[in-house]
Length: 328
Image (cartoon, rainbow, N blue to C red):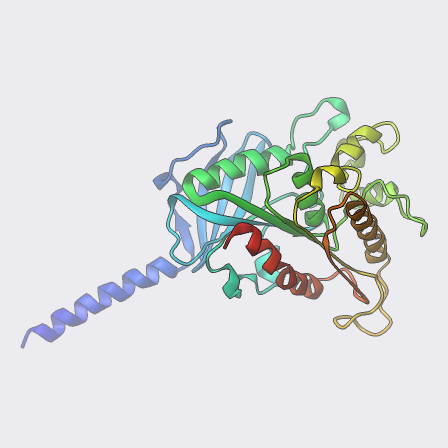
């Protein structure tokens, strides 16, 4: 006669435990006290959805804290494992939550066995260790991503050494620039409307000044990043994926871009001069890779502007290549 109340209590406790496991809220980061070699460490965790975990990292490379969002695979648990990793990079003026905010990446069945790493990169960080008038120092985004974040995620959050990268706009630049500057770090890269040739002087009138003007609009000293495009041309060239294309030979590369005219996701008559400029950059990189005997996979889809519906579609189109490279 007394079993029913006991069973009810047990069921209630189990349901409460399950609810806690999937309820957004803070997690004690000190349960996994991992550090990067330079002392970078996770100082806070926030579970924002069943498969989404936000990390706050105290970063010596940046001189401040920054964030990373993880999209964890089915069966994931903290600690050392060997999950294949997709680094998914945001664009200019954006942030680390953009991919889950504006696309269906969290619902893609193809990624249920992949750890997706979405790091903060600053509104205009350009995935670089800033030149800072020759003095170097913070912010060092390249060091933050490829050393600090990598070591923390691999030591405490299950990432293995199989990595691919994809990104939009500035993030497409980041994926390709990192791959060229660090051969072997990624097994494949994809860029969607990427700024892949910053030194291109376009017949349409755009050139390196486009980047300088954009940074000024965002309140960033444009010369702090790579210096002056003439006086510090070597610094610009060292980060330019098209100039460094030889280092990408043999790497699976996916390039996509619209031509800046109204496409299926745009209002009639829409025009986007920046996307046209990026299309010319991507065509230049694709041509350079072909000349080097390493043709990329391309989806230069014509009509289309610089907007999220296209990047969501292109992520899906590039996944077969990326997942094949991961062996996932």
